[in-house]
Image 1 (cartoon, helix red, strand yellow):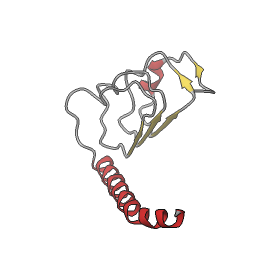
Image 2 (image 1 turned 90 degrees about the horizontal axis):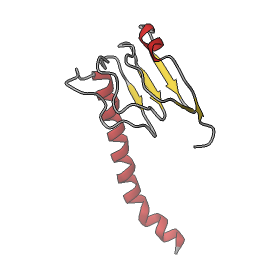
Image 3 (image 1 turned 180 degrees about the horizontal axis):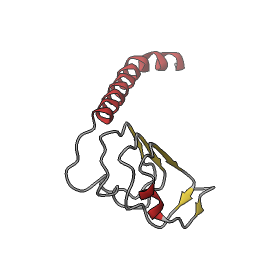
Length: 117
């Protein structure tokens, strides 16, 4: 991807950010992911996340949005995690919106075809 720069960051710094609520990382290529992230995270967007999973100790109770485009993620986390009601509500609304868009597309498709003829 154009504009991505390689960087060497001290991953231990993330463990010192205990009150971090929003984390957005883009256009940076790192060789490894953090071993720890704040349990108070509400928004996590990390394009090209380098690790195969999120940190093992991460609690997702407060997490509302998660964006991990072009990441090396194979599994969000290992083991059992408490289900976040905030994230669950967001996922539900996204699914409802997605279904609505599919249904709307099905009904609008004949109109679009008729106009093209």
